[in-house]
Image: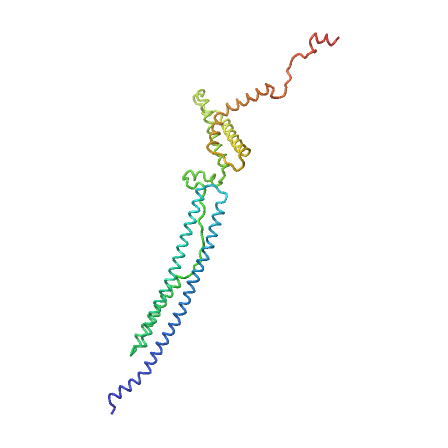
Length: 326
């Protein structure tokens, strides 16, 4: 007859191989987790270093590209305000880019440190199974499975945070000259886009010349105009006088500046426009005065002598015939 103590001994002997297998499986799982944790830590640290090096390299490249873009976009162009706004836009854009990249770099470092801390804690908790007097395979399997899930989650979070994403740098462009003028800028956009002071000035001179010639004609004819007659009886005369005044003032101003002040000097547009308006208003008087001065100089000997018709000395007179007979 077998006693109870002997039955307990036989049961312990039959369960010992199973316990050893469970213990070996747990130790193997722990070694695999440690190896995976070590490789993942090395990969994440390498990924963080790559992200840091890329960030440092992109800073220099981006500064060079932004500087070159600003220089090419503003070289020889008009508008101090547009140039300053373009510089401010590029600076703000670079600061936003730098903040985003620095934030990603810090988040990557924090994700790597968080993965290392969490993984180390999980490995210590799993390794404590070896010190327990007894093992429950179902509990150990559940704990290891949960640890693998957490490992995978932390690893995926760290890798996605530390990933280097290619970017297309869209540097802000310079706004059009006069874009802040509202409805006036929209109406004159075709002219402002040229950024040519000469073209803008000759366009303004034509307008002021036509206005001055029209006002002069209207004021001169207001008393003599009959009922039903047009305000400007001779439109062609207005156009010719206004256009001639604009061309005359433009050539006189730029020609005079080129001779006396140099080619790089720009005239004051307000003075030029006022001169054109005055020339168009008094164009009739100016042409009349000029014609009178020209005729007076010619008659005073300023030009070639003009022979006058009359009896010539010793010609048709009787004394002349008598002198010729003698």
